[in-house]
Amino acid sequence: MNNSCHGSILVALSGGVDSAVSAALLKDQGYDVSGVYVRTWEHENDLLGECPGAKDLKDARAVAEIIGIPFSVVNFIDFYQNQVVMPMVTGYEQGITPNPDILCNRAMKFGALLDYAEENGFSALATGHYCKRKKSLDNPAELWEGEDKNKDQSYFLARITNKQLEKARFPLGEIDKPKVREIARELSLPVSEKKDSQGICFLGKVKIGDFLSNFLDDNPGEILTTEGRVVGEHKGLHRYTLGQRRGIGVPSNKDNENYVVTGKDENVNQLIVAFESKNEKTLWGTRYEIESLSFLTKSLPDKPIEILGKPRYRDPSVSLLYRPLESGRAEIVFEKPQRALTPGQVLALYDGERLIGGGTYCQSSLGRADQGLHHEVSA
Image 1: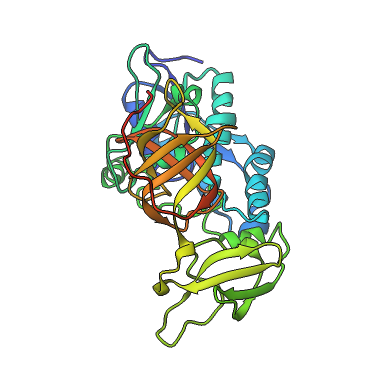
Image 2 (image 1 turned 90 degrees about the vertical axis):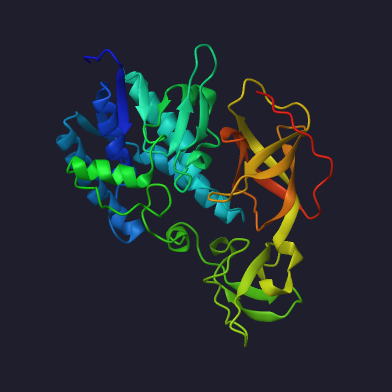
């Protein structure tokens, strides 16, 4: 491979405008750029109802041709099924709500695909994430929120490792979405007006319940209110998540207020619901436990510290107390109660706008946050 003086970078071209502009920017900066499209499905129509991959592949190939970079397609079908899809399905089957996008970033994009990039002589792997990578001399690379706060995607990288971040590149960190589309139009890229993907990682627009029906059989059961009154029948507990307002299948009340999911009783296969206007306490909590911790700092926090966290994607950063526990877990005490956080979801941890790590909710208990929080970040 003929590397330029700036180095060679492999860009994951998804068929969208963000990755397309990322590749164009890197080439303009003097890098030796190649594009790659990752195949994750063998028979998409059977599972997804439509075929987003065919259109995405066509668009990715067209982008590479217009930009003038080499383009290839890699087959990660088996890896994706085993390391992303099935863990997600198993999670839902066990009653938790996993985030496949975060798993996909750690295991596939900056896992298997980064390995592929290094094996083929590339010095780095770039994606279209809206976040910033900062690097200074002998210090580890740092990950910061993107300049476009409305599109910031640092949350989805909450569980990548220091080693992965060293080889990652994010060309869109300093610009906003309107500028990205403007650049795409200037380059006459066919994806300049293409809508952003709103679905699960590499799945397109398919609804999670419909997707899971390909793997899990429905197991109907009663829907009960928190007072114990039967108000309907659910299709299977795996189809519902804590805090869900729509698609429960129970009529609204006379005030046109919908029920909200407040819990599941796996032992008797019952879905628990309530009207949110009644200040349902089981929806809110301040104390949680997280596991599967991953940090981008030099050392792990070994004592209680006050930091910031995004309870879920698009939530603003909020103050919390982080208390290390045994067995690789930590207790989280939010300064203010949080709504409907459920096991399997991810908490991203920050020092200001700098992402320092994350973990997965595994347990919660209700209660007000402790007082007297103090600030100290282990960096």
